[in-house]
Amino acid sequence: MKNIKKHLMTGVSYMIPIVVAGGILLSLGVIIGVDTSFGKELINYGVWTLGMMVPMISGFIAYSMADRPGIAVGLASGVFANELGTGYIGGILVGFFAGWITNQLKKIPMHPNIAVIKPIMIIPVLGVGASALFMYFISIPLEPAMTGLENWLVSLEGSNLLFLGFIIAAMMAFDMGGPVNKIALAFCYATLAEGIYAPMAACWVGIMAAPMGLSLATLIFPKRFSKSEKGNAFPAAFMGSLGITEGAIPYAVATPLKVIPVITISSGIGGGLALLLGASSPIPAAIGIWGLPFVYQPLMLLLGLVVAVVIIALAVGILRKESDADDNDDVGITFE
Image (cartoon, rainbow, N blue to C red; front, side, top):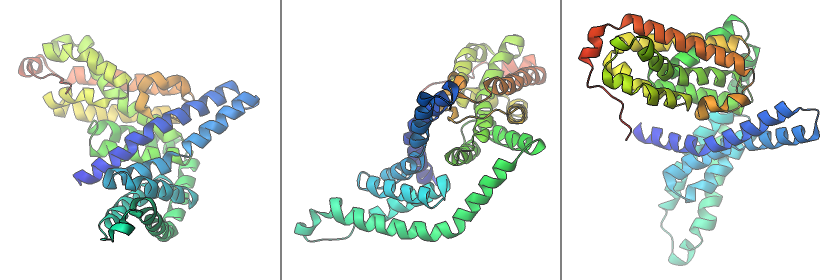
C-alpha cells in the first residue's frame, strides 16, 4: 500500500504543473472573453494543456514503478484512457499496469545483440500493445460508469450540490493530508479531467479553512493556546493560503476531540456553501488562495472559505480551555 501511494503521488506531482498551467490559460481566456480571438486562442491552449492530464499521470506512475522505460508505455496508455472515455480513473489504472508490464518485460533474458534494441523497440512495442489490450477490456465497464458519474455530477443542483461540497471539503479537512484527504483530492482531479469544475472549488475550501481558522482562533482566544501554538499561527495561516492543510496538524494533535470534528464539519459547511453559490475551479487547489482570480465566482468561493474559517475559529476557541494551553505548551509545528 505504501508503494501504491508513492507511485500515485509521483504521478500527481508531475501532473499538477500541467493542470495549473492549463487551468490558468483557460481562465484567462474566459476572463478576456470568448468573443475575442485572443480569448479563444487562450481557451484552446488551456483545453489542449488540460488534455495532457491523464497521459501525464499514467506516464509518471509508470515511471515511478519502472524508471525511464516506463514513461513511453505509460504516456501512450494514458492517451488510450483519454480516447476510450475512462478519464482520470482509467489513466491511474493503466498507469499501474504500464509500470508493471514494463518491469516484466525488463526481466526477459535476451541475446546481447538483441538486448541492444530492448529499451528502444521491444519494451515500448510490447508494453504499449499489452497496455492497449488492458485498456480495451477495462474500458468496457469503466466507460459507462464514468459517463454515468459525469452526467450525475453535471445534473447536481440545490441541496445535492450543497451535500457534494460538504462531503468533499469535510474529507479534505478530516485527516489533513492523510488517506481520506487524498481520496477526495483524487475524486476532484477525476472530475477536473472530465471538465467538471465545481468539486475542485469545495476542495479549495477543505484544504485552506482548517489552518487559517485555527490561526485566527489563536488571535481571538490567546489564553486558550500555548505560546508555541500562538507562535505557529502565522506559518500555519501562510501554509493554508498556499493550499497546505498540514499546518493544522499540531493543533489537532494537541486537542484532537476539540479540533478534528470542528474542522471537518466547518470545512464541509464552507465547501457546500461555495458550491451552492456557484463557485467552481478549473485549476487545482495546489496554489491556494493566490489562484483565486482564476476561479469562477471567486467571491462565492471566498465567502464559503470565510464562513468556514470563522466557524472554526469561534468553535475551537469556545471548546478549548485555558488549561489546554498549559497542557500543550511543548506542542509546535516543525518543518522538515
